[in-house]
Length: 177
Image 1 (cartoon, rainbow, N blue to C red):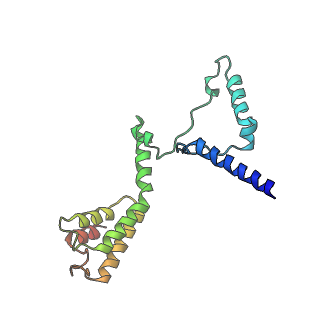
Image 2: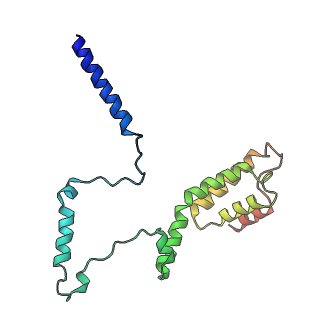
Image 3: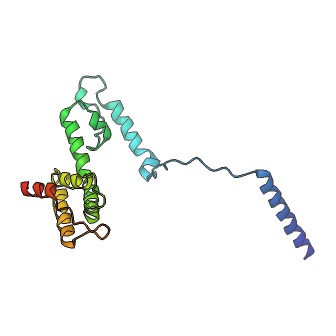
């Protein structure tokens, strides 16, 4: 019994000394984790196919159309906004604007719920709602009109007592629609 206590005590002492001599633990530098390796990648099959394609396609240079092309970029890629081709540039601008649809709708609903009383001293809320009614995205226009109509039904602002955003500028934009 005493022999086993001596051994476990000695082992505990060695473990404590090892921890003390190891020093502080160092954290790893954070970064994006590497994508998981598939079985095919582990076996090297995609890499081997690319190597074979590079070695066998257009070896003599007689068929330049057979050479691999660079990968396509996404339409909303920020590099497309600086493209010299006007169609690529415009498509990137339109796609970026369309991708903001959900954010615009959320902002419009919030502005309509706040109303044009307290925070519209400089006319910013009214101008934002009027601009949203003339947005190129149909869903944004529709949700803006619904939000303003819902705010008009609810009546005056609880904080300042002023009415909703049914002022001259908003009504003019609605009449033009």
